[in-house]
Length: 202
Length: 202
DNA sequence: CCTACCGATCGGTAGG
DNA sequence: CCTACCGATCGGTAGG
Image 1 (cartoon, protein in one colour):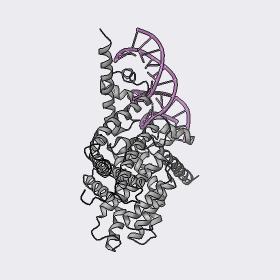
Image 2 (tube, each protein chain N blue to C red):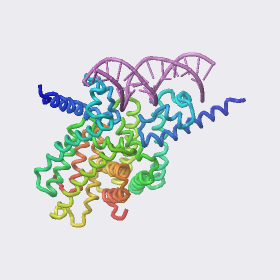
Image 3 (tube, rainbow over the protein chains, first blue to last red):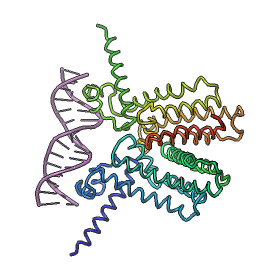
Image 4 (cartoon, helix red, strand yellow):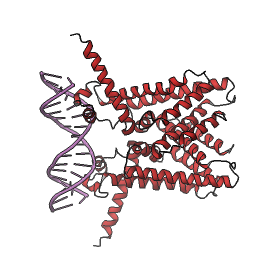
């Protein structure tokens, strides 16, 4: 009777589509998401899928957004309870490694994959990927700076250098897990991070 | 009169196709190479292009091979004149950083991009990408072990750990250059490598 | 949300 | 190396 029901249903359908997309896109890429395939897998028509977003690019942006929510919950919110500075920085690294180790996205880090897929292009998707990395780097940088200010890292530490190296360790881990299925890689990443942050026992 | 001429021509055409493919695939991906587009850009027919390889997968494998030749010339052969061990390891890192900084492939590291594109799939292309990384890691590992044996790295150094971290620095550099166009990244990568190898002045 | 359809393009083949 | 063609699929639209 009221439009309530159908609006809620539509939002539910949209969420169902996006969750499927996130899994698919992490292994096959954001461009590998095709409307026809999605429709088949979801038991819908193509126009039924596309109607929720309007265009493929809008769908890709919505998928990035959904993946961002997952990343926030799996990494950022796990570290947030820790004290600012070194404890939280360490927790962020730990949570990132765990996020990759647990295979939160079946194809590895969603954003690293998207970055490689879109870094040579122009447009809204590339801009959105870049903005997410900027935000992530900014968070790591802030906690690194706090760790320096608190004396937990040497006073002449360049926070951007630390963030650069930490991101490298995470990328090496993602690569080792995805291409080589190397299950010793998480331990290597933890060791590398511990060394870089001066935490012998991590 | 003799078939000599046409065979040489065919090989030349094949090389022309592959060189175009390497540039295209580094920015658009190995899957983004389409026969029709290549044909248009090269002023040939689709079947003219495909005839040199037989299938798209065979073309992708040939492109990987061609990219491997470039990498060998731009990185491996530049370091080979250096003495085995630390000098050559340092030269390999230097040459890798330079290879990324100079933009030898317009889309960044050809193999990192291919790894991300194919790491979730099965087949000959994925296997070939993995084999190339195995070879590259093996070379870095050998020189690291020699550096340990020569006393240029601590005796309890785990060569695989060092290689893991060096690859991470290169991936962070590739990412920073491609997604962020950050021209301070090469200096960061050099600094990180120098720290890891215990070369204060690099 | 559906059916029915659009032009474009995909990888690949037949035959020359 | 070419033309001509195959079935399949692409993103998207019209109309309901």
